[in-house]
Length: 250
Image (cartoon, rainbow, N blue to C red; front, side, top):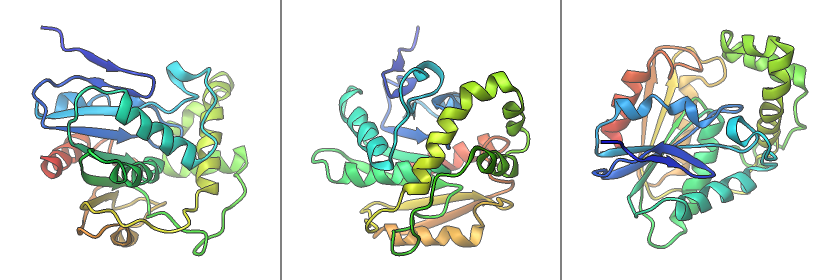
């Protein structure tokens, strides 16, 4: 029996007919929906895994990248409301930049009547900073972006050393870093669902001690889990992380 593929403009996944919850995954800056491809085979039938495909990469390469966090979060929220069948409860998981996008989508979903959001799970990023806390910054240069990528993902950064590949993948990375540089919500919206935050215990961009700040965005309690590894701990610790996430959403 062939399991139907979920493939809309914004969302990718595999349909799970007996699912009790839909886990929506948000990639890191420069990342794509296939970052979570393996999660489908690691989750039980009760969990339907759907990944967000941002514009400007892979099969959406010809589309312009989002210019602001507001534009991106509005579009993803609209896709979750109108591009998927059924009314399964939603849980959101975001890594790095995806944490900020997931938080903004969670905020919008809570304002939508009839939609059930059960939990926000964020990873590898501190909570959003308001403009009062930290002024927006100019978008970083390509050299600054690549230096940062090398810090976070020395192995993955090797792709950017090939001129022909860099020409294809740099525009989306540049756009995503520009979004993050300008993203400063006017205030922190406190979600009415629990928030779980994960991180690598050797992440140079997000110390474990800083993860507790996500308590500022929930009225329903915060849980913190540190995994062994750096910023991209979720790749070598994939099975361990997915088991943990499934335990939180079911």
